[in-house]
Image (cartoon, rainbow, N blue to C red; front, side, top):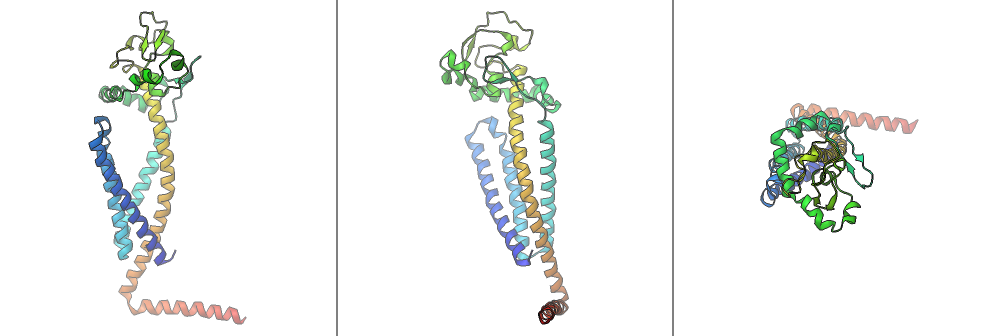
Length: 291
């Protein structure tokens, strides 16, 4: 790739990523002022990501603009670290989310989930008292369970519904408990459960209790996280390919910047060398034409 081409591409790519970083930072500020405590926890990571992208992009942009080999070296090292981090995270994400799947229940259009089916990492995170206390607080605030009665006003509609993993695990007792359904938000708990599952005793009709302390709720959250992580992992694969191409172009720009710097140091010798290369190329073309 030519000197002008590689520098031009790197300049524009990093200029665009600087604009993207500013947009990410603005989004982080917006999150901190328009969301509850559950989503505010993402504010610092989002702001940090925006700041890091801006820093790397600025170094790459200035390096290509000034044809500065040192700045381009720093840019390539940071970009290489990003590539390694993306690769490691993606591999770990696929490993962690490899286990766990729902179980079909007769008469239901959705699946139920069991915590024991998921990876040990999920078990450790969700069984941590502090982690689950924070997650449970967010689940209660989300009003997902309380909204079921508004979405499915008849018992028939509720039985035909396709509940999400969190709704299926946190808003209702497991089917094996055998509690009769009164409506989307109320079960007849006077009925003696037919299962020894501890979740049957933990479920309450109260809007702040429901099945939020149940393993089935933790399993629903694990399934939700698994799905989200898979989407992120696939996105990271695409991002890895794009950044690898940018890294290759950056290497070309760094090499060309190094050659320019060497020419400035050597002065006339570099120009003479280039003239000789041109004359040799022209001589070869003329010779082949005459033959």
